[in-house]
Length: 94
Ligand SMILES: [Zn+2]
Image 1 (tube, protein in one colour):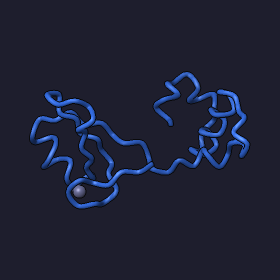
Image 2 (cartoon, helix red, strand yellow):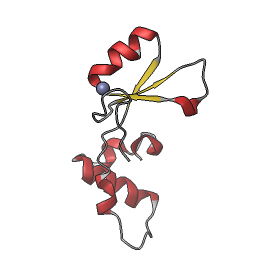
Image 3 (tube, rainbow, N blue to C red):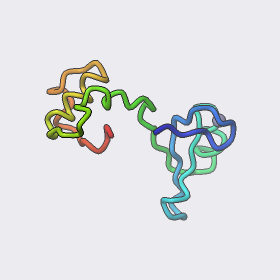
Image 4 (cartoon, rainbow, N blue to C red):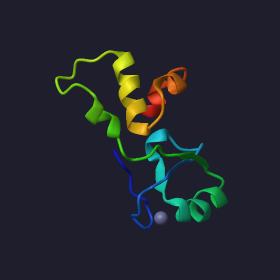
């Protein structure tokens, strides 16, 4: 899934969340707009993961795979070794 900047509809690279609002009102911004519209307004900003979910193509089409297979697929799609990322949080990569 990829997100569009709320202001200019470029590919969003940041999620801005307002601590005073519930999480479902998160806003999405590109590199350019994030500074003016989020950082300067004191919002909390998190980088969006690369929009390409290339790991999907490395998974079995029948949907049967283990967590290890998933790590392997993610590593393959990102050009890294699975052992380098497997101690991270899987959710971060999905
Ligand atoms: Zn923008």
